[in-house]
Image 1 (cartoon, rainbow, N blue to C red):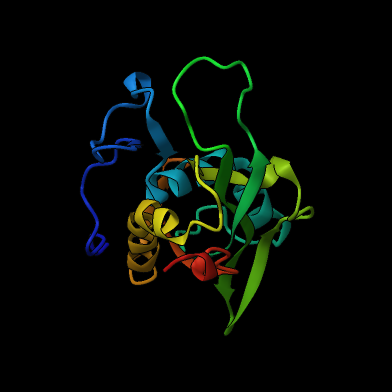
Image 2 (cartoon, rainbow, N blue to C red; image 1 turned 30 degrees about the horizontal axis):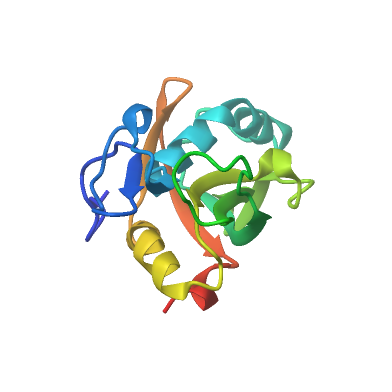
Length: 193
């Protein structure tokens, strides 16, 4: 709440066709697909639900009521990295760019307000580990190709900007809880046009 501004209400996984930009379901994407991605807010919901136990344990470990409704403040670190050469040298199949780029995010910390300050109930111990890094978008593109990255990532940027002014309500352990997001290290802004 409020609904995300400038963001489609469609939450299906987005497939970007290299030729026409048509969105299709993830299971029947065409061979000339150049990107696969999740809706940013849907990916955050999935990541938070995976962490339900950690969040409830964090509340208990700080002697806080596990019926606490929020707001929970979630700090997110983003990164956008080239993955190098991913081409297959078999000489068959469609011609695809030889480089790939991955956009991902990590839930760095979760804190709650308490007596005029805030208490951290979760902190990622290994923020650079592949295990906590959630892939959001995989692109067959060269990271120096700013035009292509801009075309692919623009909807993702719009979703991120809209979430800064919105609160997410999630049913966790039978209780509706509210989450606010802070985005750090937007590691792709310098790659865009």
